Image 1 (cartoon, rainbow, N blue to C red):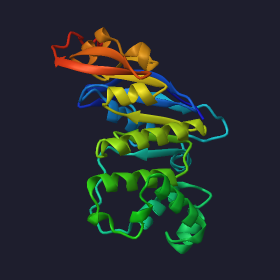
Image 2: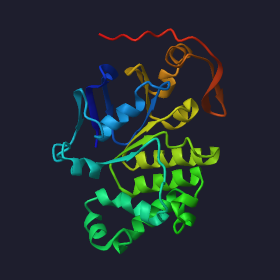
Image 3: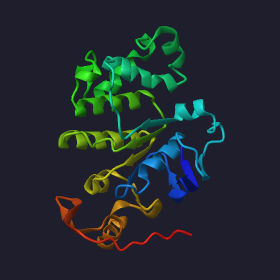
Image 4: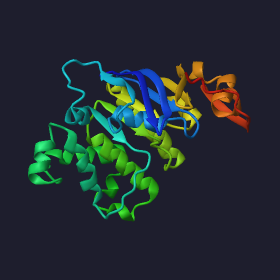
Length: 271
């Protein structure tokens, strides 16, 4: 399934925080959305997820058989991992992950009828925890876990939705370096299975290594999009991030080496 964004806008108190963004999120790809703080990345993701209503423009699914404006149908096809996930109550890990299956039409009736321990979704929960390396936490309660452990459990809950389109807002920010790489590799695997994977992120090198496409935002505007090696130029990164960088190659990988913060010379072009 492919999502298409057309002239998407969102305003807060008259300030346009997402400004005429058009893009395609094709199946089978990992798409990274990057930009400085306040660029509009999270707002854009929430618009795509259907959690915010656009001021103008639209989000469409290139599949006429899916009534994408129906919230229940949208929930079956889109899985969303927010930026700030906090476990404020002592729910058991496997129960939390099982909640991810509520939106899936295959498992939803079984969950509602028999509770989150329904046998029909037991395998889904077990597999989701295993691929996130969180299966050993299954019988723990969320409030006992570290931030990184909780992050892997919330990722497992996302996978339990079995959604075609996965939207993740900074999924690796709480993870140690090894689990950052493992998580990004997992997202690549999910894309290879035919899903659309859209990731808001800050790590330029992870984006270079794992993303098929990147979109650079600043001041609510999509300033550049394309393959990471085409988009990540010294001039482009300076204008978007206010960052002087050196672009290097090492052991077959292209890397961004930050040198210093600079003044940004990119003025918003609002009309």
